[in-house]
Length: 137
Image (cartoon, rainbow, N blue to C red; front, side):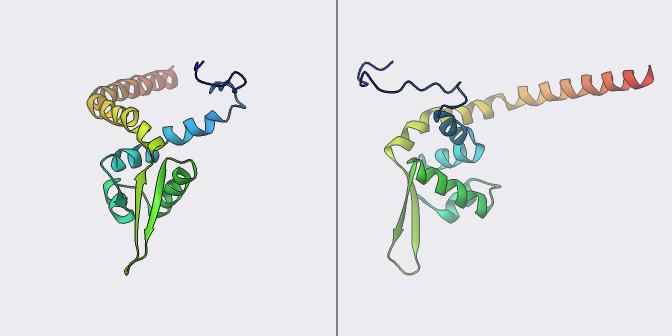
């Protein structure tokens, strides 16, 4: 427990089904959240640039994820009073704390994808071989 925390501060445990920290874990473990945080790590981006940077995300999913992250205090949405209208998204100080772990996860995925793909192939080949033997016997 944090020695700076008040004595009566709640103790959160993500492993308990009723702990609200589970919703935060689910949010930051979401693939789109991770990619959005990584994309915003270098500074503010507009919606269209974010959508291009995070390839494969639909506008609807991006909008919803940005809204959820704003609600959770991970990023801010700034609308500028200009013509045409301009909106930028940027990480908050809380969101900045996710940069390092989520960037590390992204790097891990890139560095180990060959091993993961090999493992999937091996698993799938064994699974198909086992299924074939069962139907033959």
